[in-house]
Image (cartoon, rainbow, N blue to C red; front, side, top):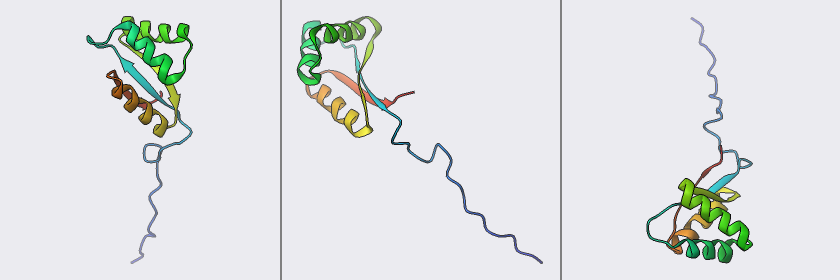
Amino acid sequence: MSIAPVQERQADAADVADPAVPWITLVWNDPVNLMSYVTYVFQTYFNYPRAKAEKLMMDVHTLGKAVVAHGTREEMERDAMAMQGYGLWATFEKDS
């Protein structure tokens, strides 16, 4: 009787987090915050020029959400928590 050699399991792509894959922070539309306030938050926290902040705010308002930042998982988690601290609805996820 021969014994088959034990093979190590190879990790597939789903098992390994790729740190090079960027993450995003999303801000979602809500019925509470004024559009001027959302613009103010984007200008204040992200240092975006008024035109970019207003464009992102309009995306949130008309499309229901906007990608407001790209970066590492840790950065996007920090940004989402900051947006929540300002009272905005925000999440972060891996960019597809």
